[in-house]
Image (tube, rainbow, N blue to C red):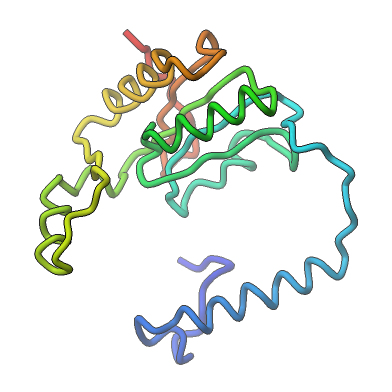
Length: 184
């Protein structure tokens, strides 16, 4: 399978873990090309659709295309698993209170890497570097239940003004379809 980010097999960047400088250079060059044709769209930081999307960082999720969104339509908050952490609540609070969003859509997905991890991951890191991470892995075995937990965290946050329009979904990475999760 090839993607736009694929590198030629024989290139130095494709050969090892020290690929960041080459990949970053490629991204900076792409930005220069983008900027050469860029004109300020004159948009406000407030999302047009007044919606915040919380989703997994998985590279297989092209949220704008999958949801029919355009630049300026939404706030997008991503992390490993699309987990509603304290930092996600922080971002949602700013999104709602300072920038006018009213709805939250949570998107987890099939075949998530967090389904194969456990909290032992933190202990392994601690053994390796001598310090336990302050964050939880938030691994899970049941994606539907994890979406329910995320919805509950958003709905019960005292910092959020708008918790009535919170819906959760699982994105199927093989079909591209969303499946809504009943919060009950």
